[in-house]
Image 1 (cartoon, rainbow, N blue to C red):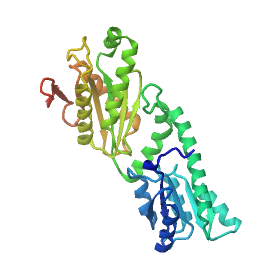
Image 2: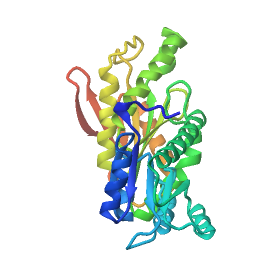
Image 3: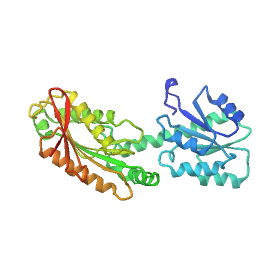
Image 4: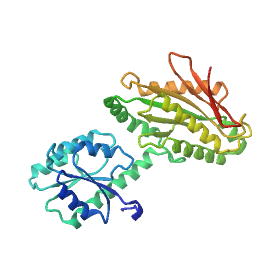
Length: 327
C-alpha cells in the first residue's frame, strides 16, 4: 500500500554518527526512497518539526553522544515526532536489546550486516501500517464536508500541543471565525450552495494557515477555529487580515449582505504565556471578540490589545484597503 508516486517518494531519515555507514544506507535506499541523514538527536528533532519531516526514521542503536534508545525516547515525547515510525539498526541480537527497543517506542528493527532487500521490505511494511493508521485518523478527526480538522481533533491533539508550547515557552494565538449573514445566504441560495460556500471558505482559510503547526478546525456549521502556535498577537492579526481578504476576493455573490459578497468576521486572542492562559480561555476571548465584530459591521478583525480598548480592523471594500480604528 505504498501509495506515493515516484515524484513524491516517501522520506527516510537515516540517523547514524558513522559517515561511511550513513552513505552505505543511502546507497541501498535512494532508488526507492528520498533519503536524508542526521548524526544526533537535535538534528533529528529539528527535521521532524520542519515542512519536510520524514515519513520514517532509520536509527542506529549505538551513537557516540547518546544511545539510539535515548533518541527514540526523545522522539516519543515530541508531539511532532511521536507518530513517525522508528526502525532500529543494531548489531545486537540479545532479547534484552530487542525488548529495550520496543519499550523505547520502536516500530521494528533490523540487524547488521543489513541485507538491502530485507531493509527495503521492513521499511515498506512500516509505511503501510502508518498509512492505514493515518487513513483511520482522517476518518475520525476530519470534517466530512470540508476536510478540515474537527472537534475530535481538538480533544485528541490540542492538549499535547499545549504541553509542548509550555515546555518551550512559546506563545499561542487563536482565531474564531464566522461567515457573515450565512443564514440569509442559505435561505436565499439553498443548502447545496450553502455547503459549497462553506467548502470554499474552508479552503481559503486553510490556504492562509499554511505552516506545519497551524490548524484550521470546523468548529460549528459556518464557524471555524484557527490555532496558531508560536504566533504572537501581531502575527495572528496579520493572518486574520489575510483570511478576510482572501474570502472577500473570491467574490461569492451574497445579495442579502451589505457587502454584496460573502465575507467573514474574525475574533483574535493571543497569549504570550501559555502557562498562565488556558486554551479554553483563549477560545472564549476570541469568541467574545468575534461577537463584537459581528455587532459593529461585520467583515472585520477584532482583537484585544490590553491595556488599550478593543481594536477593530475594518475594510475599505472598493479598494481592498484596511485600517485600524478604536471601537
